[in-house]
Structures are given as structure tokens and as C-alpha cells.
Amino acid sequence: MLDYHLHLWTHEEANTWLSLDQIADYCDEAARHGVTEIALTEHLHRFTQVTDIVGKFWETTESNPVLQRSMAEYFDHHARSDLDAYVELALEAKAQGLPVKVGLEVDYYRGQMDDVGALLDQYPFDVLLGSVHWIGGWRFDDASDADQLAEWDHRHVDQCWDAYCDAIDELAATKTCDVLAHPDLIKYMGRIPSNPSEWWDRLAESAKQSGMAAELSSAGWRTRAQEQYPAVPLLERFLAHDVPMTTASDAHRLDRVSERMEDLSQIASSSGLTKFASFEQRERSMVEVGE
Ligand SMILES: [Zn+2]
Ligand SMILES: [Zn+2]
View 1 (tube, rainbow, N blue to C red):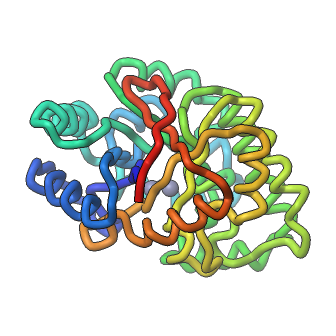
View 2: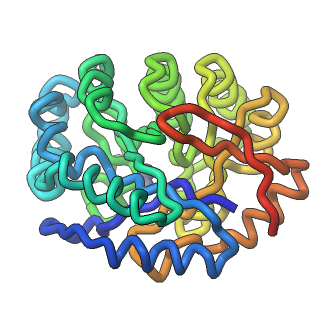
């Protein structure tokens, strides 16, 4: 198996560190779950370089002052590290023979992905995940923040899913990234339309049109949705469209690395999924992975 979505730091930590030992420990923990290759995919919004590019985007994408202020604080807390140092560390881990890919989890910035892509092109990434974590300035999956949670009661669930699918479609169309991370993240709080088929169709179509791969992730089991990403009917749509898949745990700390890979493996095999997408220097190849 592969674990193509891993973070070095939890969201609570503003002051971050870089350690080869930590990466070696991640590789060991992943191997215990049958994982032979990992990708380090820290959030792009952890690095000061992104704020130089996107600025205070929440002032134009969001009209609610409460959400604007919250996003300003979020970036002040998160965007403190140096992207060059992170990439150097990942390259060093790779050079030492650890089974590591150099990656990032890239957020969607409306209308700014060309600029973001130009920044990313300056680095020797193996794989870039594309993620939608916020709609305008609303962090819909931030269960630690009361203002974000309250928004779920101010909006109709169908509109939330519409806005999410619009953002995914725009992100995919920019072709900035290689893999759609947690493709149905909008289910995070367990708010799901009574018949999600229309939205599943749209997400699968966006992936197909862009040529991106998509992620089969165990992180969904840690949310109120209580299921992997993507839901099985969405996975079936991806496979029907020949969308290549990766597997991932989206762990932010060592004891969660490659968590429930065994369960993902079962879902994959019962869906007839035997080959997974691996990346080197942003080139995709399909690999067969054993148990
Ligand atoms: Zn994410
Ligand atoms: Zn993540």
C-alpha cells in the first residue's frame, strides 16, 4: 500500500520543527501497516511563501467579517514556516534512502491558482495534493471553531455541497495539482444531502475532466461522517471514469500514520481496485500493491 497524505505537524502547533528522525519514524510506522511508500504533504498554508503570493484573500472571497477575522487569525497561526527548508528536509530523507516522496497539500485559492502554480513550479515536488478546505472564507471542516460550526446552521446543506463542488471543479480545471485529496470532504460534519448522487456525479466528472487522480483516505473515519473518503458510490464513479486512485491516512502525528490502511485495502479489493497511482517528479505511474 501507499500512504500519500501525511503531515509533520498538528494544527495546534504554531511553532514547527524539521527532523529527519521524525520522517524515519513515519516510514517505520507506515511499514507496520504494510505501506511501502509515503508522501510528505504538509499544508501549503504552513509556509510564509504562500502569504506572499495570495495575500489577504479572505478580504475578497468572504463578506462575513466574523469569518474574515477568523481566517486572518488562522493564517497568522499557521503560515510561519519556510517552504525551502521543508523541501530540503524531504529531499534529504529521500537521498538517505527512505521511501519518501516530496509533496504538499495545496489549498484552493479562487482566481489565484496560476500564481500558486508558479510558486510550486520552483520546487522539485513529486506530488501535489489539491484540497478545498474552505468556501469563501468559511472553514467548513474546522470543528474546533464555534463560528465555523455555526455556519452550518445558517446555510442549506445543498448549497454547501454546491459551493464545494464548484470549488473542486475550478481547482481541478486549473490542473495545478495531481491528486484530489479527501474528495468528498464536505461531508466532514455529517451534513449530507438526502440524495447526494448529483454531487457525486459532479465530483467524478471534475476529476475525469482534469486527469487528476483521487485519494482513498481513512481520515473520514475520524469525522462525524464516520466513513472513508470517498463514499463507496463516489469511489465507484471514479473507477467507472478510470480516475487513478492513491491511498492515504492524512495523519498529523506519528500514532496515526497509515491508520486503518487495512480497511482501505479491503474496500479497494472489494471495488476491484488493484493498482494505485505513484508519483515521481509529478509523473504518474500505476503500481500494483500487495497486502
Ligand atoms: Zn486536507
Ligand atoms: Zn491533510
